Image 1 (tube, each protein chain N blue to C red):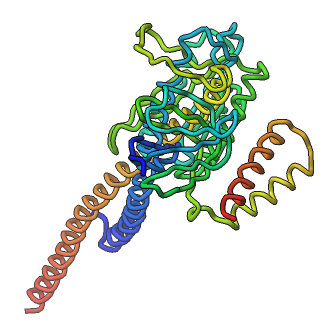
Image 2 (tube, rainbow over the protein chains, first blue to last red; image 1 turned 180 degrees about the vertical axis):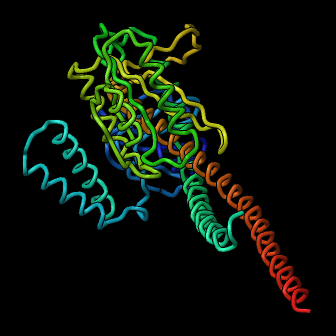
Amino acid sequence: MSEDKIYLEIVTPEGEVLREMVSAIVVPAAMGSMGIMADHAPLVTALDIGVLEYTKADQKYKIAITSGFMEVKDNEVMVLVQAAERPEEIDFERAEKARQRAEARLAQKKVDDIDYIRAQAALERALNRLQFKA
Amino acid sequence: MASARDIKRRIKSVKSTQQITKAMKMVSAAKLRKAQIGVSAVRPYAKKMEEVISDFATGETAHVFLEEREVKKVAYIVIAGDRALCGGYNGNALRYAEKLMNNCEHEYGVIAIGSKARDYFARRDKEIIRQHLAIGDVPGFSASQIISKEVAKLYLDGEIDEVQLVFTEFKSAMTHIPSVMQLLPVPKPQGEEESQSTEYIYEPNSEEILNVVLPQYVDVSLFRAIMESKASEHGARMTAMSSATDNAKEMISKLTLSLNRARQAAITTEITEVVGGAAALS
């Protein structure tokens, strides 16, 4: 049993998603999965689309996030991402539709590059949500 | 004096106008509440991002969004509403933007958000670089991202060299202040050189992080500006409609009074006629 010593805050532009004391966090950092425990050295890292996992009272919780970044300082972890969702919040049908839309757009390949990149990102997000939910 | 029938007709028309303004006021109040929640959600996020960027940008880190290049063309993003009937909201924002443009020493163009902004500057023969109409009453982050990505692309392609963002800052339902901020290049933080910065580990490295953070900062800044403007718009419309409803009420009571007078006058005339007729007979 480890103490819940880390203050974790997850913020998106549309509001705060989480603000809790936790004991450990695992994030999808740009260089690969990364674990944060109490008294971690100050750190700033970019985050990839993926699943953030945190432990509170020896119970594990998961949250799907899109890209963003994280700041660790004095046992305070601030996660700034564009979107973050708990499994029960994810709308399976909507994610599935988003996946189809993105795939269709990629297939068209009228590569006005920004649209193409956007569709790719959308596909990645949709897949992340679907996998997470499954 | 207008006849009783004319006055009645006017009362009816004012009443139906009042009903409309009342409904619009109610709708705006509901939208204002939503937009207000959005504003209070995005503000801390934007602030946190500013903090992180000011931690980084002081160093020798370079990024195309930070780099100041020779300015050939400035883009003004002007956020206004799609509809009128919101008091001075549109006018204030647009006049403020126009003043800024008149003081601009470079070639410039307008990126209009909201059809009022588009119409205003199109009428004044300004170049409209892009336009985004009907973005909704309480737009989501993804809607604003489409615009900010487009702006970022124009900037990266070198079509524009500086982006000024004109929006209306939301102070309260009654007070809104037209404001401007430089969106691109991201202004370097000034002063407080020796920010007692902790020695951070940068993972993978500071350039990579800037690559992630700066585009998001642009997204969030625009989103915040849109939310602030929308909240201001709803607030302004609510206030305008509320006073319109009050005016209508006042007008109705005045008209009712003159209706009663007119009726009374008609009765008096009739009685006088009857009395006069009777006197003539006897």
